[in-house]
Image (cartoon, rainbow, N blue to C red; front, side):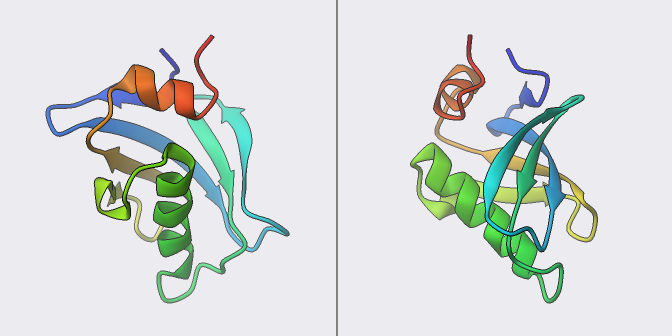
Length: 98
């Protein structure tokens, strides 16, 4: 399993390093134990946080309600809770599975 994914009682926790104000929204590979995510939104008025949850939900093909930001509201290091999928399924959908 990828170092950026952890199982929890509530679902799968995904550790992210978010880079706001990027030229485009995209996954940018692993950085240590975090998956880097570049978003075009600025870190103002929770715009970057909304972009993160929307892009993660889109990438995993799950409803937005199944993706919740649980840590790092004002930090670049964020943790997202994903419900309804296993860690193996999240890894496969994000291209992290071998």
